Length: 92
Image 1 (cartoon, rainbow, N blue to C red):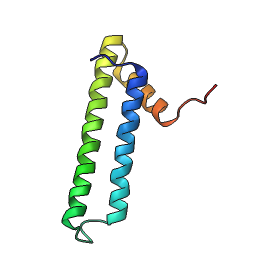
Image 2: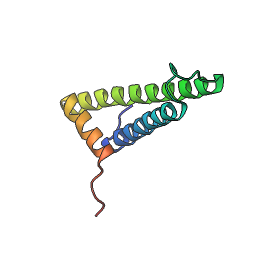
Image 3: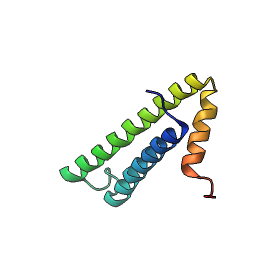
Image 4: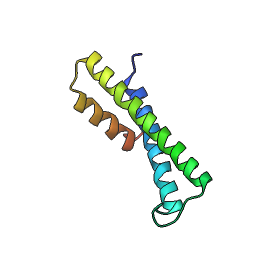
């Protein structure tokens, strides 16, 4: 499936949000080595971590396909996607 740059940016934002959720849970629950997590906490964290992993994998694969299709260096496409996702240009 071909993606546009805007779609890649949206995918990156979703992956970033998922990563933030994992970090929030880790901060909220505390280190598992210091405080035993409940089964619910463990399941919640693992579900969030899997979502982040899957979204990150999908955006990486899409960036690779886009770069190949557009005949651009992959690292340049990835940088543009991340920069735009994390620091959007001001609205006109």
